[in-house]
Length: 71
Image (cartoon, rainbow, N blue to C red; front, side, top):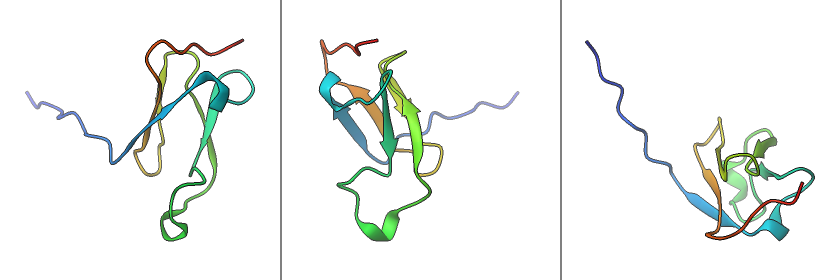
């Protein structure tokens, strides 16, 4: 039986509810990332569970403690 190890994120970005767009989403790469590490822009749902991970770079986007996404 093989075990799958949990992958640690490269970076964690904490967001406030005001940082989210639309129905609780954000996008990656974010404006603070250096140009050399950009990948295609993807939208990540953070509002549903409070956290989302970029499928390209592994960056985790998380709502700050106590923040809630407005729907």
